[in-house]
Length: 146
Image (cartoon, rainbow, N blue to C red):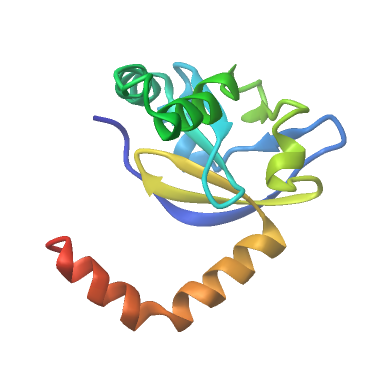
């Protein structure tokens, strides 16, 4: 299982939809990456290897369950292979930018085996809400053994 992505970075998105990847993440993505719809209206960016692991789990979900089909469609149909250009940028596909509201500035949040790409304002709102609810969240994590 994957690379160690941690930290929070804010980068500009140019008019063509190109987003600079933080320097410390670039080597991990040099072998190719996949970007797709994420949860909470962000985008998920995976290394090719970690994407393959996730994709295998998604195709193994029971096709008879509507939630399984919906989640697989969200993740798989929305996915696109991306490559770093010479300046260390990826091109976010046109159809993904509106979903996440990514236009001028984006926050790249490292979450160990994936990078989340957020609209800057939406990320700040999400962080504030989560920080206010941190005690309740911690209680729920205790139930999961964390």
